[in-house]
Length: 131
Image (cartoon, rainbow, N blue to C red):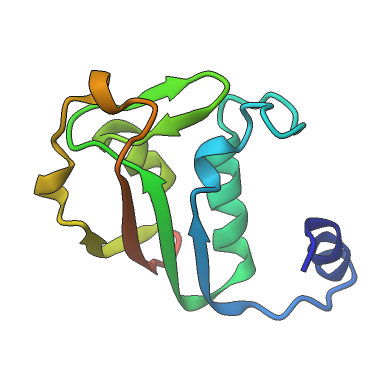
């Protein structure tokens, strides 16, 4: 579905929550304006929150994003690289089940690879919101 179609279904009460979501090399661009979207410093976090709302209570999220073991970075207006600080906000309300490649392999010289970062795929399980 196009985002406009999802919005319309949501507003009309016709949206059926999904079992799983797969996104690869997309969220790191949200809110940076590179593809004509409005500038939103937390556009990636807003997108993650929207995915949470569109999924079933026990949904699984597969998210492929540029990642680093120690450092977060924004390469304006290209993309973000997710280190532990930004990653914990992006995956709030989701429990980590797996990461490929293993987290320990995401410790590379970020200055040399900032234009071609390593994309890790995180497998996450939706957690209930605190009451």
